[in-house]
Length: 109
Length: 113
Image (cartoon, rainbow over all chains, first blue to last red; front, side, top):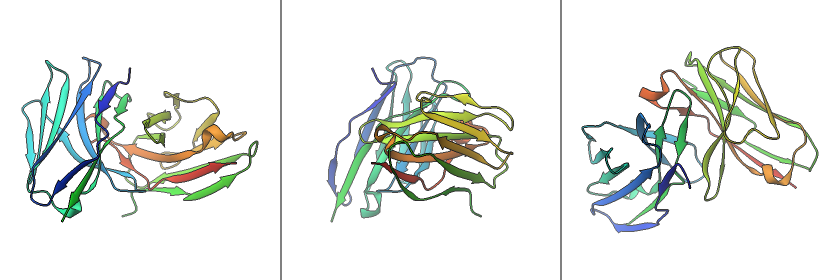
């Protein structure tokens, strides 16, 4: 079983749509969580951290549910430029970061 | 502000050849990492260095060696390349990773034929 699991997608949505991704993690000892964005043939870049109380950054909202061991990312008012693969990350201790395989998002005009 | 710099960007090796992937960061980070990314597998940790002078194995260390040359530089060596090592390799660095996550280099696309 993978440490972090994501639906690979792709999610195909029109511009302006709201889209949500979920990610589940297997280790209840996970301490911190992140969402990364990866464009085709590029390196992953940090999108946002995920806090226990949930957090928002512009059109992006991240939520953590420790009881059910999942995190989510909500994107409102999708833009063409949001098209990318979104990676979910769980951190167990100092150097144990586990990455999901990513969820691909295609935003269409 | 370069961040994390990896060289080379692309490489083709023949089975059995050796090579070293170079990584340098200019953010004064203590920790550095080498990951490989394969389709459907996500990013998997090969080796990491929590601080200058220390290195530790990650999830998939077999076939690789590393050197933390100084605080800035962390290299990955393939002693005898195998087709199974065809992948995209990313170097990353972090200060307090649990708070700030990683900064990745732009990657090395390696093909072993």
